[in-house]
Image (cartoon, rainbow, N blue to C red; front, side, top):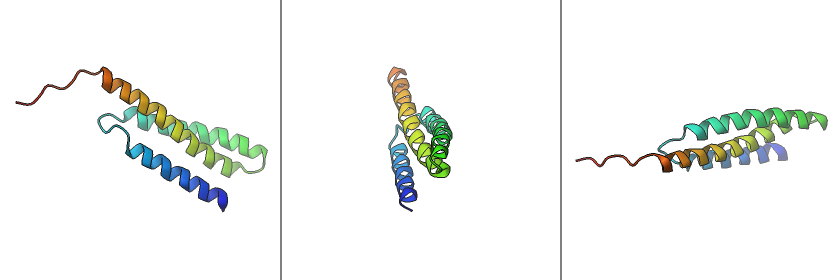
Amino acid sequence: MRTMSLVLIMVLLVGMGAGCANQQSTVRTKQGAVSGGILGAVAGGIIGHQSGRGLEGAAIGAAAGAAAGGLLGSAADEEESRQAPAPEPMQ
């Protein structure tokens, strides 16, 4: 029960962080969160299986991977928006 509560809190924190991301271009943020979540779930499942808690390991790994991937993707989105030329003002 305690682990499930921890996973729920982590998922909520990731969701709040993704909601605060740059609203102009979030393609890499979303891709990073999904990719990180998948890789984290696989790695967490393998590690958790070694201790007899594969599902819990996969859930924690997915949340941590999604958070890390989302942060890396957000940084890439921000870098892209800094390098893009400013839009022309409307007349």
